[in-house]
Length: 298
Ligand code: RIB
Image 1 (spheres, helix red, strand yellow):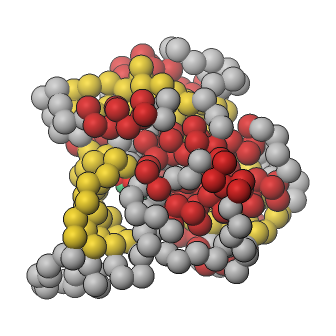
Image 2 (tube, rainbow, N blue to C red):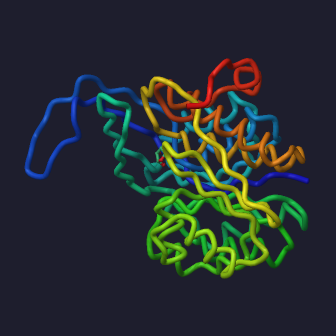
């Protein structure tokens, strides 16, 4: 069984600011750093660091060599990352404030140039029973879901960032949802998380559902029971890629057939460690770091 992560690759420009810029305001940043990111790239590296073998598929531009070498640094297979020489890779402009919160503006670049023909070409190398991990930062997502399902692949979706394109996809084909409370509210139409989870279970009876709740931890319906887990106590430096780290560790835990509470504990700890460090993919901890961590629940 292989994991194919079909997703975005971004060059992240992260600006440290005292407070986020307000409408009409011009502010100076305290510092700027460039990182490799994109929810696709981050989640591929998180799966790999957690212990799974991963194939990354996506598209980069002429400036994408740095993204490919970051994936290679962590031994993620890049044979299915296409290169469009005439275009720019995706990028993200990220503000990080003094308490480590972020906000992000995306430029899709080559992430939005994935065609149906590209999808057919990539999926031809995968088969029934393989895992297809997806987020919502690339074009042709609806087609990838349709074709992956047709092949019998097991679809895991992190529906982030939420937008109307996402709601046009056939989400009934998704086996695992890993989402936050905002995404859960948008997909279910219910603001309260417990009601949203109930509604999602009714709408997608064959799916397993994770809802992360920020400071309130996480809920996981594994098809039989709802499990809840709290968050670990860390000094937040940069929340970028915390959700991506959780997703990679969660999926690896499922593949390793770990107990649900152990999966949630590993994934929550890994994402807490990521929050305590700057950057996106580089902030994801290794499995050894997670296992040896002495973090305590809040
Ligand atoms: O989830 C964090 C990621 O979102 C960043 O790396 C940025 O590139 C955006 O895709």
